[in-house]
Amino acid sequence: MDRERLLLARRIAEVQGGVASRRQLYGAGMTEIHVRRAVESGRWQMHGRQTVAVHTAPLDVVARRWRGVWEVGETIAAIDGATALQAAGLKGFEDDRIHVSARHHHNTSVVDGVTVHKVIRRVPDEVVGVGVPRVRPAVAAIRAAHWAVSDRQAALVLLMAVQQNLTTPRLLAQAHREVRGRTRRAFVRGVVRDIAFGVESLGELDFARLCRLKGLPEPSRQVVRRGPRGRIYLDVRWSCCDLVVEIDGAQHRAGLNVMLDNLRQNALVLAGDRVLRIDVVGLRLEAELFLQQVAAGHHPSRCRFDVSHGHP
Image (cartoon, rainbow, N blue to C red):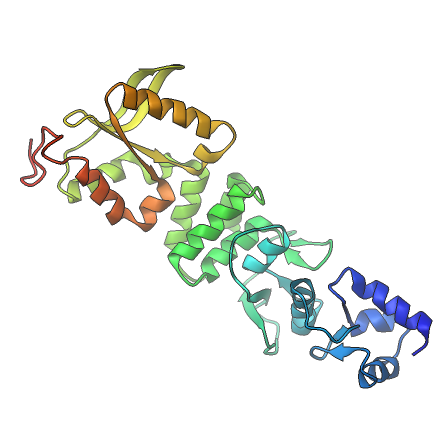
């Protein structure tokens, strides 16, 4: 192959992790013979039927994403789930698999290193048209939750997508209405509501029910106190032991809310209350552990309610 064609191939592959598809190379004027000779000479390497690396080094993650799309089917596939979120900038979420989605009625081959998911339908405009074909973050997050290996991983990927500003609670809730998952539907619906609406989605009455099951007294709800910036509305409080439980939704981590929460908690502690904080997703995942802490807050040495007998 002449030098000009080699340089052209490298330019095509440069923004794709060093790989190009046969279709791209043929569209640039190269032939199957050019590709075969470059591979046989040791300049290039094939990674499947459609993916050509213009080098012989291992593929990086960018190249592996492109390969996943091309090998599954360039016209039908897009990276999806955690892979799409990572391509959009998700940090700190460990999933080395390349997740690719395709419509359920398409025939797809098994591709080494690629997890292919069949979806019933594409949401309108779900695939981002710039760079590697990928599903937009809100839809990808919902699918990642359904494809996760555990409830904990499902909740984590939904939370992280919002916390890292890849999507918004509103878009996440909209995507949940549009995407039909096959697993843990009730759990994903609950976590999405927790993220989108905070404590209201869990419901103070639900929390009170959990407390009753634990043998704890009925808490007072929406108690009003005075704080450094005016009125403070408490989620739940037990006057029998000066114990406050604040149930935090995802909005508590946004903007200046962390600072405001700190001021609020400090004021309560200085006024004599003890404060426990529970995030709504954590309560959904580890209800028993959190309720054990609430029960510990009703210890007989600090409480005017005898938890062991279930009455004041």
